[in-house]
Amino acid sequence: MLTLGTGIYWPSAAFWVMRSYLPQVSVSGVLGTPTVVANHVYWINQMGSGQDYHIIYNPDFWSYGRGRWQITDVIDQCWYEVPPNPTKNPVTFILEYKGARPNFGSSLLFMPWGALTTPIDIPIETESQPYWWLGTDE
Image 1 (cartoon, rainbow, N blue to C red):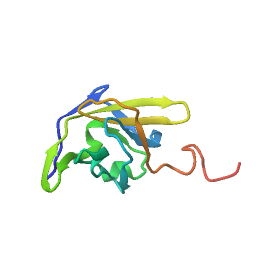
Image 2: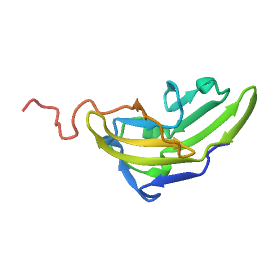
Image 3: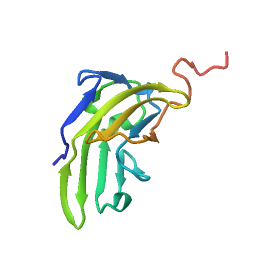
C-alpha cells in the first residue's frame, strides 16, 4: 500500500518538467544528512527527533531519461515513522520547481509540511554528454 500525503505543487499540478534538465532534487525542512539508496531518500532518527522520514521518488523519474514529467508523478511515497511503532504516517508536502541557480542547475524542491530551511541538494543521474552531442568530435 502506498503512503502519500497531500501534495501542493508549484507552479501548478499541471506543470511538466523536462527530466534531462534536472541534475538534482532538493529537500528542505528535514535536517541532517539523508541516506540515499536508489530512489529512496531517508533520515533515521532525524536530528534526534525519534522520527524517521522517507521519500520514495518514482523509479522511472529517478533514473535518467529524456522524457517530460508531470510534477504530480515524481513522488511515489512520503511518510514518517516513530519507532518502534511501524505505522507509516503520511506527510503533507509542497513540491516546487526551482529554475537554474548559479552552479547548481534546476531542481525540484520537496518541502514536508511546507517547511523551508536551507535546501539539501541530492544529485540524480544525468547524461554524461550534452543533449546536442552526436557522439563525434566534429
